[in-house]
Length: 250
Image (tube, rainbow, N blue to C red; front, side, top):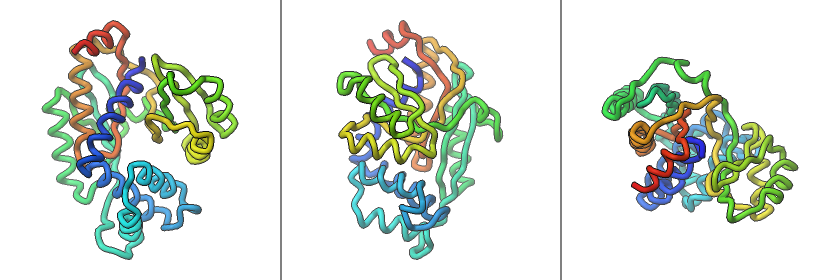
């Protein structure tokens, strides 16, 4: 299983817990604010806002919260001073890490993220130090026991997806970011519910980790993901099967 798929599974389980304590709603609200700030309040004319609102609804975020976030983004309400940033760095084992950030206080966030990297054996880097190792792709992940590859290919490829592939016990559907919304809508219309869906930063090459390094990297990624200003975390690690088996044993 690729490191990205392993991390995506962890994020999915974590998001369920985060949602219960309101953390996920806070992050989704920031995504809506930034989307509305950049492209306006009309979801039909603003793909990014349409995606952010769909994600918020999928997380059972109340309609009034969504509308409030949109108004903050358009300036109708105060609280729309949210900046979008990208932090890059290195984790244990030399893996590349990218953090999509949304914050109302750049200095505070930079200090806190730098500290998280250092505490967990990593180092925050400069602009473009690892960005060249990633490319943006729409990603949908399905447990292999809930859908057939044939059905996924039929629906996803027809909607504009680039690839459907099996990775361990999951299927991954990949598409260009511009096709993300139409692929998501086609999957929904076919009643195919992904375990995870996002516009992700996919690594173009990976770094194999042993068990010890894998544990350290996952702890760093979870700490970063738990930060209120971090929207998404990506890395280029890979966990070989034997290391994955040992991790699963605890």
